[in-house]
Image (tube, rainbow, N blue to C red; front, side, top):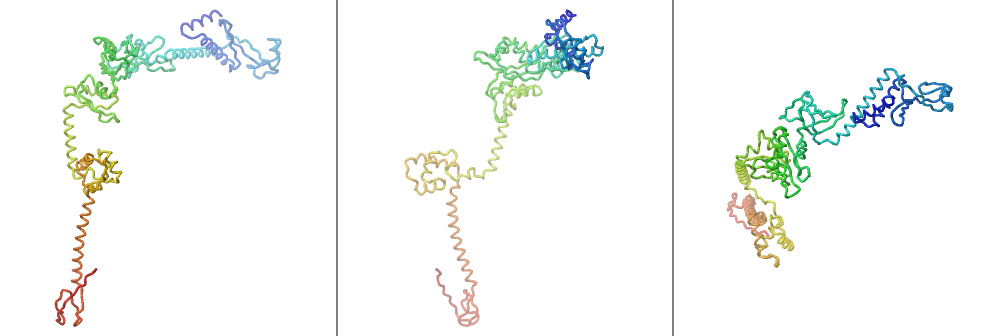
Length: 499
């Protein structure tokens, strides 16, 4: 029996790829499970292997007592003395248990435990083997298909290729060779699941590692890959060496390298382009194979750009159902609007017309009606601002008034050239606000004269309505009467000047 056990252990380690320690642990768990099924507990079960692990035995460890309460964990002193003469109450003694005495249910429980343990050990072993292979290419063979999911025979394990990870160009038959990338590893009740993909951009990256030595050696780096599986792929690459063309390295002589990738993808179109840190250049490259005239950055913060192309290149830049520009957007991470040169000219004409209409609409609004100080003038020379401020000349009105009166300060720094430039700037703005004070004074003087005339007229009106007594008869007379209407005496009025 000992030789049979040694052979079984050796076969398990070779066929299942299990370690010797894992096999021994499984045998121990199996015996303890059968023991527990028989006695109700295994807390006192002791499994012992001989030195060369060619044999195994299970013992029941019991406490020596004077009066047994639990026969599974306790033994009478008299019975223990028959097994060992040196024992006494309180000691523990190991009693050999013959596994052949276990009933059928106990043996079945042991087998199930062993199978479950071997399954878990195998899953752990395979997981440790494959966990570091995520992102790598693996080769397997078509085994079966269920609900669109293809199951791939990978040798030790089974790979799963979900429908969403399959290219619409590809059709498989039984035993067809399948090359895919490992994207995920899952532990399931049935075993280890290796999730595969042929649509992941990293699948193309892994193929380039195999087909392009410069990519494998990190001389050429892949910046980003975007795909519409089955239709088109865009690959942005750059080189760490000036003497190595990254696009040429990936395409290969007469396209031999990129053709190998295209064949692997069942004829999917591939654009290899050069990455550039300048977004204008990169967007231009990303729209290949279309030829772009220019790229205009509309909003750098929001990453919005306009690509201008010739009329003949417009459909190529957009692509079928917008595929080319959509991939370019994802590759460059910009929102790209594509227009032809004629469309841009129309757009510029509309923009110019709208600006002209806006200017006409607001032509009566002074552009700089809030400027009052010299320092607020746009593009003013800071030197002359400082010189005038030194002499307490800050406002435009004060400057013009002093200049007209010839009272500007006599300062060598205040050159004729600087004054001419300042006056030219003021004249160019057509700014009239600094004349407001003068016009106000003029209006104020005009209003004063008007007020004096109105006062005189009011005084005249006031005197015309004033009533007096006739010095002769005492009747009521007014200033405009020459004779008294009551007695007929002649009237004469004399005025005293008011100071």
